[in-house]
Image (cartoon, rainbow, N blue to C red; front, side, top):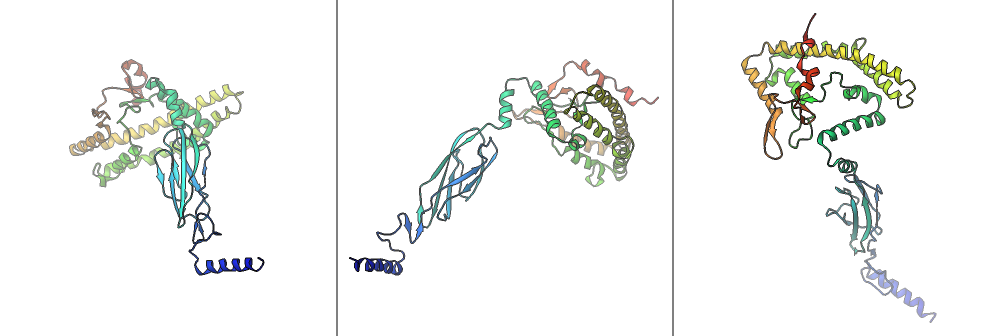
Length: 350
């Protein structure tokens, strides 16, 4: 027996060397030609995702797989080694990975993944059933409060003027429904696109002389905006700094309030002067426009203010016939008296 065992071991080793693709009773189960079948495994992050948040799946399979079959449990699949996927709705999903190579595929690996409701879904559920005007007001104030708490000074100064108060009172008064109306939207590039049409004569809306008048607005307004003393950037910086100080302590709230109101008065004066420059420049350009230009500008305006709602009905706000607060029509226009009923004082020169 002592002589037979070494001979048997030597024979098996020789057979494996001469025929590497052959299997033997001493071979590894689930392998072919020395290549083992992959054992599927994976990890994912974040561990507790929310709806619409991207989840990254990382392959951790052994034995060098060359192909991967993912099933994310919501009907979506992937053949990538380490894919990413976002779940549209909250719920529990079984994620399954099958890994394979030339030796075949082993048992699939599965894990349960729980997706929580996203922030937007939670907000929509809590606001469900409320009047649209109430929803818009809540979202507006909630956004401002969050911005104060999580934002920074630069954002307060350069991004959101409404955080400092609607000093003219008409920020939310519109001549078309601004929000909450499916099918009606205002392009985020409207100001830039339409503004360029007013200062670039090659667009065909204004002459080079008219474009020069309107382009000069920047120089006329920059002193009040940032170059002069006082200026709007300085005032907004001080107002934002004062208001942010109340997050730490309210001990000086009366003094802060008095200073903010005083600064706001100067702010309104400077902004009013810039509005006056704006009005005068456009009045000057308008006075030199011919009928063809005016017709082309009317068509441009209509392209922004006409369209079709999602239910197929058309809308046309090129001529203001109704005033809106957010997306609700204002039936009692006497409420607007301080804002639109008597604007003569804004244009009166003593």
